[in-house]
Image 1 (cartoon, rainbow, N blue to C red):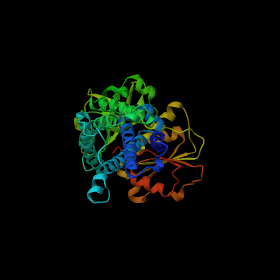
Image 2 (spheres, rainbow, N blue to C red):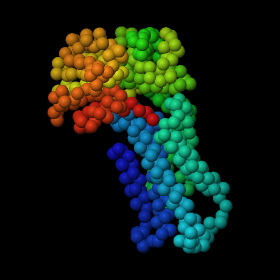
Image 3 (cartoon, helix red, strand yellow):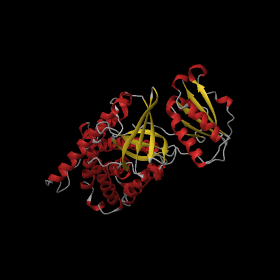
Image 4 (tube, rainbow, N blue to C red):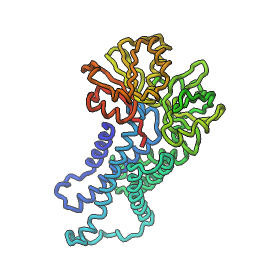
Length: 423
């Protein structure tokens, strides 16, 4: 969130520099106009940042600590932008309302205000339309009433809204502020955001981090788990760290979906995805994918990577959340490293447990103690049985319900996890 606060601070600073020395002696209409300018620069700065984050650049994802943090920042930036745009609209309309209610007497229009400027009128209309559309857009995004595929398609409307808002902001910037820090900030974020919007509309998001792959094996180790082995260029494996995930596009009409990488096979030049059947699309995958299919892989993403040894550690997995821990264990075996002081708790219904035999082998090879907790008979993990001190680090991957339970009993500074919620 510090990046969001930094952006707000820069916008406030550019606005404050532009204030005249006698600002405190000015009346209502002056400060109303200043409110319009301030809310305008805040709105376009937030929206420009939204467009940049929508590109999912790896350098930004890494700097923010993972794609989940980037998406959380994207979400709160969108909410903040919507709030500021609402304030901007209210300040624009307020004199008319106050005048109609008899609370404000408007003076005559300044000379020259009657001069027709077609582009100015278009810029105002563009801002008006973008405002109403953005309110609907934010509501649809937050309520989550649409399936993911339809949501992904509609989300591209945001790029069009930004282009309209950028034209509105740049053209209506007062002439005396156009080349001041205030106007330069508006111009800069408008250019950056517009480039990002055009990249989005042309379907080029993630192109620099996208790799063409081929499915070389399809396996189903259990009834609810599908393994896809994908051969990729060596460049992807050079970037990959155990525990990361990638955005896998199997069918263009469905777009990309995030799946954890179970392990890599250096000899085959391939990676193996473990996909659990959670929704309509993933339940149909076993019938829709075949060896030889061409796919697209974007990434790798995520900072849920094997930690350095040195602290007392607990690894807690829920359901398919065991996948990144298997990747960690496979990496330890490949490096010949052991972690005898680490304990892994695998919380799952006994009949849904996967890779149990391989986990036993990995436990012997790495020294990591693995305990399976049958949630049907044992309930949730009993944290009182764990020796948790202020130095203990806990790594978790699993369902949100289990994560929320852990957060009520473990300080957030000691619990490491990723939020696999991209909406």
